[in-house]
Length: 262
Image (cartoon, rainbow, N blue to C red):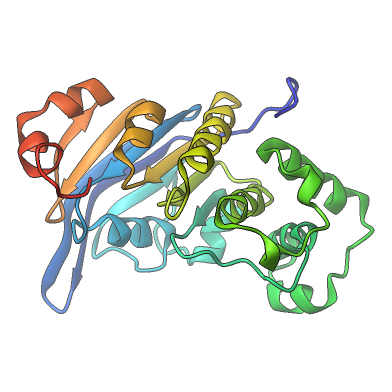
């Protein structure tokens, strides 16, 4: 799926004592985590636990009230989402956000041009650098890394959910991230599509990328992750290797031993 010579320059993501409130309600309280290069780190918890809020705070969509976010030792405090993207942070969302009227290649091209020019909407309608060899090379590398080169000229809107998720992942890679934040990438996928996603994410981690995953598919989380953090009511209640988290009494009582989602 990927070239043996390919490498991805991941960087350590550190989140320290993050707190975020909304109208007096504390959605995340004093939460910390670390995601290392070359591995998948997961953040799990039930609906309403604060996972998306934490992702919003890390990515700059909803800056925290307190706490620090470091990427490769650089403090991202005060940076807007676009500046964090240029600093090496990319994020995907649970709801697919592809440009259905563009080809797969053009969707990725928009990401490359938006990364370099900060004029994404103008580039969306003009695609100014269509024949630029550097733009083309970056798009082709991302397609290869995710294993979807054969889809380059397909309309993005014609693809099933599983392939659309891979296109979104490839588009994120076009921004040359050091850390990739994935918000429920297996949502809506079949068993076979989830297996393929597992293969792709494992490959990207092996190539050196830092991946932070929020996911409700506990089997995928346990199979992919080197380290897992568990959030409940905005507070971290456990962390550790998959086997340790699965065996943790508080985690089992809250999620694994019930019908609640994790």
